[in-house]
Image (cartoon, rainbow, N blue to C red; front, side, top):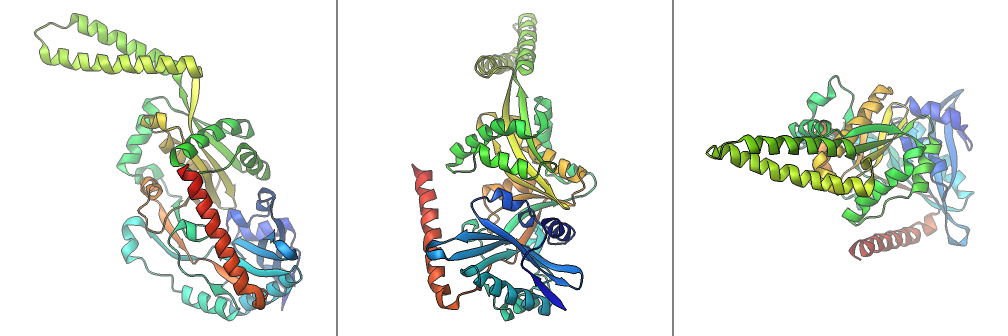
Length: 413
């Protein structure tokens, strides 16, 4: 016999979610600490003494004392169990009504399809999807369709996920392996840091914001993430040892000048090569000297923020200073975060959302790491006030459109 719980202990909720196949960081109890501008609750269903469904619910206050609920990547439960789904949704509605909720939006972590990029055309929809959609429909939830654009849903419907395998680097593309080799040859140093690195990480992210004309997050938000997951989070920095590179380049330039002085005038081919090398070394010495004078002994050129939850590792933010693209630091950062996750006991490493077209720049970059594409089932709405649901949906759509328009205007300024 099922029993609906209006309050689930956070520890009990995490224990349930972390061992579930649908485990996701956005359903962790601590995610509520990150989303401080939302109220929250954790509700669930017990069968006897066992928790069989649980959900972190984010609550947004609306005008006139109304609210809307959002369950990111949840609820977590067996969606093929029709009786459980209907019971949970029915009691979720009743509970939400007491909080003057208009509708509940959810995007459960149900995989619609999974495939490698080269296998997309042959990928089949998982056989249980039809039953899940039917169960959700019978429970009163309205499926919002299979969106393709990241802009069309709160969470991306498509994500690039690397699953743990032996010798994972061998599965990377030739370009990625070359990038890692260049980063190593150029002495790019990887450092796994904590809260002390927030300012440096935010500075790198700001470079990405300026380059792409987007707005990400500030230092306070990154600090909040690390505080919410103190033992399961890292900031990975790619650092360029400017002094070391400068001294190495000076040595190369001096050796080149000595070789030029000793090179016979009639050895035209060799002399031509040495002269080309001289121009390259001289330019590099000049650039590194200027960098050394302006920035000091070292400079942070890329970074990533990664959080472990259950058997998952999530790369939430990553950025690079475009001036140092030739050092290939992003390949080193993505790989270091991935290997940190696997060494911490994770089964997979989520590199984040991508466009459903699979043709965007992020997809092309992430494709270098041999990811599986997880295509999710999409969003559902569960109306609470049927009388006001359609009106609230129109208001929600208008607000969402205005926010997108505002972001685009900021990008174009």
